Length: 278
Image (tube, rainbow, N blue to C red; front, side, top):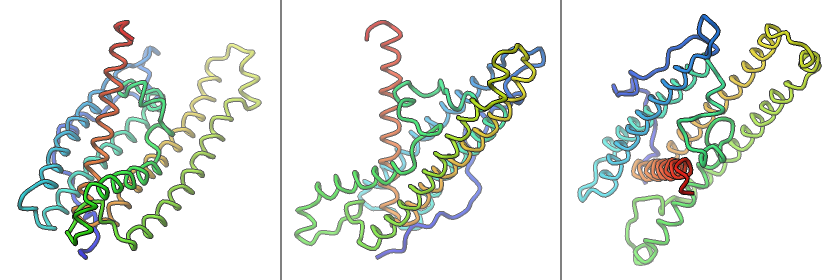
């Protein structure tokens, strides 16, 4: 059996996303105190570039998975590494944007209301990646079952070995524990809004003190978001490292297809609701 797919460290290739990093005043306010909307607008543009990049990556992954003459393992590893580098770039830019203003990250307008319903700490729940893997593995196994019974060679997620499943199970347990820790940290940060100093301020009109108190609480939520995003990326990379190159390609295909399908469905639904059709 080929070696699992490592994620080599490399400088991400130049992409449209690199020119879309938001750069606005910290806390999202202009000098005259008015709300500075450019933060949200610029990240929206960056997110649209990320979706375009993800669509191009999906095409390349599908080509590799369905090629009559499959690429060699080195080429597959390079493709996987390139796709992962785009996710890394996304989270780096998201972190930089959150440092300037955390609020849009918890009320994103670049995603649909459907997606927002299922968000966990500003994004997808890391443990969902394992459910995605097992769902796709089961679908591909069922589709190729007769071929496998007759001794055929299957090169997709339907051929995940027992050793790989054990390694993935250990990673899943670690991920769930990390999720619980982050959820507890988020709860503590949210409950701090009802602390005694906030209750006292509620009966006053001291905007400066309110701003000071909320700045500290926003910073706690920014730290929680950073931990959650790091776990999201580490989980994806951890799963990929335990898969063979072609399996990693199929996993990334499933992840991109699901993300793009739900996003486009949700955006279309929002458009119809806004138009009064639904």
